Length: 78
Image (tube, rainbow, N blue to C red; front, side, top):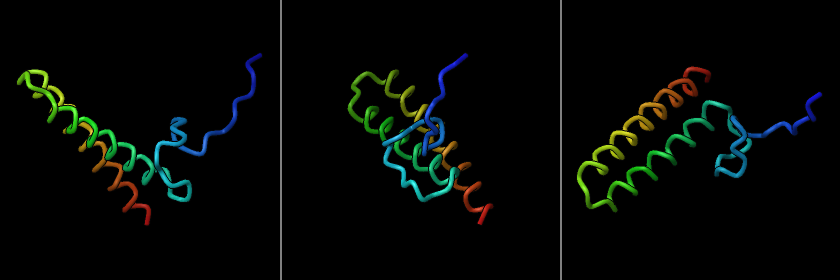
């Protein structure tokens, strides 16, 4: 029998990720993807090798698309 786990206040257990607890799940997702996008872009700007920089910017664009989808879901629920 598995031990009981505490219910997370954030989707996917991202407690303390800087997402307000009063917002809905789609808004939390959008905030998470926005933070990851900004982090990826920041890492890319610090890179000097063009190929890893291009890959990191590609990853940031993926996070941007996920953020936009989450924002659309949040808007559609209102």
